[in-house]
Length: 279
Image (cartoon, rainbow, N blue to C red; front, side, top):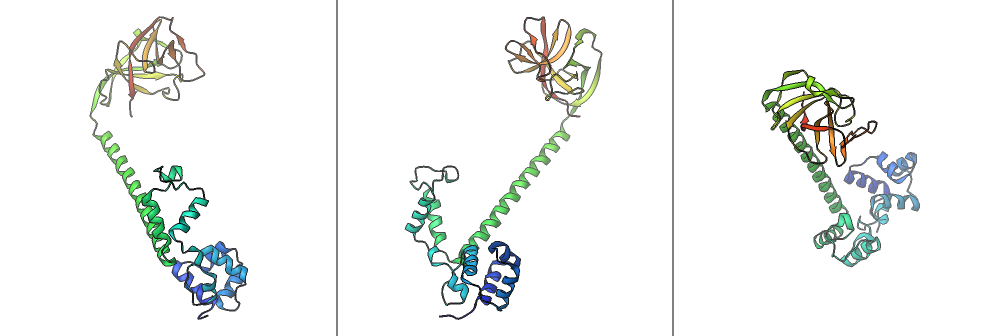
């Protein structure tokens, strides 16, 4: 029995979904002029246009025409078996042997039961669930963003609260390039944030350790008698001072434009690089 018309039903649909005419046009592909006539009741949509609207918003075509039928499409009122078969056709593994659906496509029992209940809802119920899900996703995103901001503030506060101490400063002579004689290095003092284990601060000259260490960087150094392969240290080679990575067969320059230093050279370890001075 027909109790309404397409214009009124389209109005009801727009009100329930809080959408505009432009949304209908964009989602269905129906021209704006034609959609205006449908909404004003000046013209009834043809069958292909009714199908386009019904498909776009998952509603019953007969309901759109004004008949006294459920708004929800009949073929979307799924039983558990209908849901099972549809998911199986889409390639979802329903064996329950795998736990992570997001990765493997497997539905665990809890997720499957939730979907069964969801499929039993009418159109308005499903819209309500979707709205709640969107709100919760937005809440989680905002919560994660707030956590990041708090962590950043904590890190900034920790930096500000670090005590500053005086270190012996070997001025810009740990060469990341051509080298300087260690015995002739001028020393001074520098105030820097406390670094556990650091015995002195040394400056970097050159770019052979880029991208990790740049010309002008200041490094915390701990005096040491040995390093592990992969550690960065301050070394002298025939009296010249370098900052290099310890390799299995010598000293490594991280910048590929520079050669490594062979282990057969007269290499002496001065100390272990603990990190950069944060200025």
